[in-house]
Length: 487
Ligand code: AMP
Ligand code: MG
Image 1: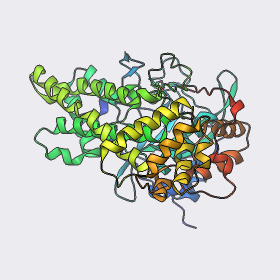
Image 2: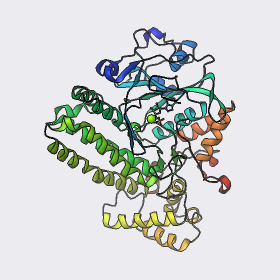
Image 3: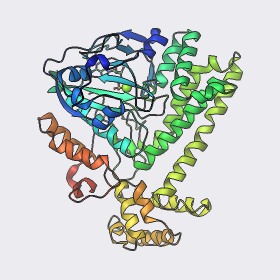
Image 4: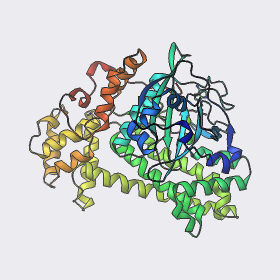
């Protein structure tokens, strides 16, 4: 048995060193009865951390931040953010800590970060804590996203702290250990800009370039190229969300990364019946972050990033604005291209190049799905079955089959590839009723349903016996689904 003693865990503190104005040295609160609930052993291996050691008292201590290697500099990161459109100049890690950065097996720098580790100077009215249910939700949904091939922060572990946390009722506390390319957010740039310190803003941009887009350092205008790179990464990311029906739920600018990784799984959910107006978050009364609004919101957030970095784009503000507007203008085209290519793949039509045939067919399909409240995920898998010759399952999703039959006939005439469809259309996603079932059992101490759900979504495309209920839509009597923020 190989054991990694704490002293061999090397945590750098590059963020804190290069951007001290945005890092407040801080410590995690004690976890009196720390108990490891779940550990991603494959991710641990990627990070060069020994899973057996992580399960030991010292290892669990690292995962809740109470035992850190010598020389580590845990910090709460400062950031600002537009929340539901309103600007908050000082948000920051109110209940989180960046423990430091690790070099992974591929030589990449990865943040090791904790959520729920106690109040920090950014906590405002919050208690700095997190509870088992929402941390396991982030764990399972980020796992599902990763398995779907969608860029995301990762979840290394969830540890129950043994503390009771007061929400609407007393709940068991937990800490999530999260891993990310970085935790640089649009809101980080807004924070640096709001200080008025252009040197800080430049150092932040240089830090982001070196960590995420080293190639742009060679560009004629590196900061403009950085912005263009973020625009491209977010256009691609949000297209991926849309293609699997992922609703982030709280796309505030502090919850949008520079790296293009999905971050901060709060009130997120996967859409069931296809409808652009789908909202699950209990606090999103206006539908600002509805499924269908996500591309527009991403573009809006990127405009806030552009505003933040204007002083780096040109000395003359008018020219800086012109450059930013032009770069942001690329978002729609890149988003549309990514989404269209993805949709062609979902329909098994990647080989059909004639967009004038495919585009109207896609438009018609979306109208049919919405009108009949068809389960988004089930549709594409049953469509592949129709591609193999059995239209029964897809027909059963629609009450009125006349239009569907006509549509399927024209789609089949294009020669779709059903096997290719099954490689991009998930069968198993973290369906809302299954997530709730798993989290509520876990909160009561039974992790079995959670483990089973995790097993299903970890291989989303591979049909396996015994997992039928993980592929099925919610029972009709489930009622409308609601998710909650900041829990
Ligand atoms: P979120 O909605 O999770 O992205 O969080 C928005 C802001 O609220 C961030 O600055 C968080 O650190 C902070 N926050 C959320 N929950 C808590 C909490 N329980 N205690 C302290 N700060 C919190
Ligand atoms: Mg957040």
